[in-house]
Image: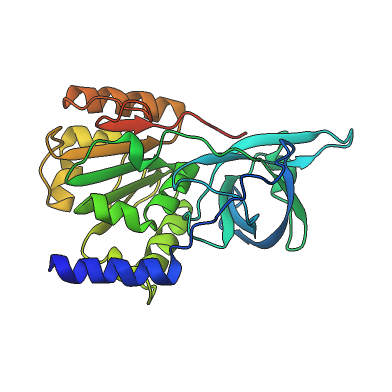
Length: 285
């Protein structure tokens, strides 16, 4: 079985896991680059995704975020932190965004169309990376709303399945329609003829809704406390000996989940100090 999995990884890596090479002698400006919008898809009146071109020199670790923005009338760039939703082997960049009517950036960003230009920062950063976690058996990715974006990247990264035997991605939203992106992303990955095999039998998506009737209802913190999450998935409760976690979502959600992780004996980690769970603290408006 292990040999078959290794062969699968080798095939997938050869086909799709195309990491960029950077010419270290080439001049690198700190100014954001202009990238062309390739596609835009609106899911609800609050959520949309878009893809854009990827500079040949742009490298990132799946799960990191980058500054994205638009030029203002005064010529200065208006930038906000966005998690890269595409995996690091992809030829294009994908982003998942909220729409805020009076948001300085998103009020304008939500109106972009194919062919428009967006600004892309130079330096990706973030804590939601595999390097910040100790080895384990099971990886949880807890998200609310657009907090699913970094996990859209990580769940499509072959390295995730090299390091963990089981990957559970949770996504909680207020309305059922807001869960469409996570379902489409997971289904698209698992049905991919080239790399989908990596996640089959390992990846599980657990969605919950807080304001409408759904298969699973309630906030993820409530489902953890009641044990319903673990019962539904058929897995044991959180155990620091085997489980690792990543958290991305609203401020209240991340604070509460951090407390729950610590109650279960998990320790927070960082790039410089890998441990049992990590939290992303970057947000857009």
